[in-house]
Amino acid sequence: MMSLDMLTYVQNQLPEVYRNLPGRELDERIWNAKQRLGKDLVILGHHYQRDDVIQFADFRGDSLKLARIGAQQREAKYIVFCGVHFMAETADTLAAEGQTVILPDLKAGCSMADMADIEDVEEAWEEIQEQFGDTVIPVTYVNSTAAIKAFVGRHGGTTCTSSNAKEVLEWAFSQKKRILFLPDQHLGRNTAYKMGIPLEQMVIWSPGSGQFEDVKGDMQEVRMILWKGHCSVHQKFTPEQIQSVRKRDPEMKVIVHPECCFEVVQMADCAGSTDFIIKTISAAPAGSRWAVGTEVNLVQRLARENPKQHIVLLSTTMCPCLTMNRIDRPHLLWALESILEGNPINRITVDEETAHWSKVALDRMLAV
Image 1 (tube, rainbow, N blue to C red):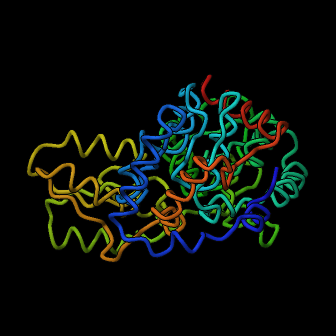
Image 2 (image 1 turned 30 degrees about the vertical axis):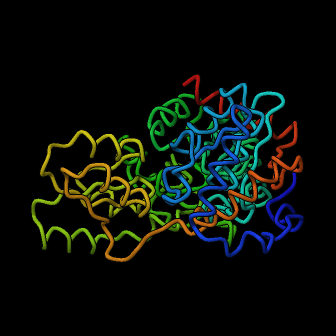
């Protein structure tokens, strides 16, 4: 499998002809390309995608949901994923034979996924095995590279989403005493704590130092080994922001994503996956007031689609996913017109062995 760096290297720069097109022409040409490609094309748009792009999506959702939907569109020869690199990898892993996955801008990566490099993980696994023996099972958040999913699959582990993390961890603990949780420490910590595992039984593995950190008790009592990774967006939400919101408006409910830090999740009125946030707010009574701790494009869209509620971003500063926002209309148009020209750009291809073990990990999760 080509690494993101290699893929970026071979990608041609966005042609000059697409760089300064007016918005109206971009929209017209994208709609025209969609119409001409017809059932040969499906466009997938992640919830965090900018509005001027997601308007063209045939389906919108979170990363795994979209990857599975793409594979179900058997007539579609081309899956254009308006998301980030690991999402397109998952789509290719699950894609049906003959489907081609395209990421409009190969530089649309994920800082969290990049925090778990496969070489670092393999080195860490040796150290962890030396410390704990054969008592550890790896679990990775789906927000990880195909290489990490494959590593987990080869070592008897599985993937999880923010929606099913609790059920997956329960299964993993039925297999082994301890879990190595990749790559987001916060989702792992928040989920395990909610299950009744005390913080004293959690440690952090730092790939930078090659050591265990945040050790609070006896190492032999450790249940959760948390990879030192995080989401750059959800890291921006703080306890001080919640205090400020409640001081200004005591009626405001705070809802956050479990990728937020432990203190924020503990202070919030409720926490859950993107799907949980959308459903909770959509079902809330008219006049209810919400401060939402997740990506700003989604929060603004929730506010527009639920005008009977008062919905604001928890932070007073914008919290966009900057890499997701690299997918813009010029890149989308380039991707679609390259298909029409018979020379598709920016294909995402996962090699056969990596795809096999990644799918093993994903299938274990779906079985749970």
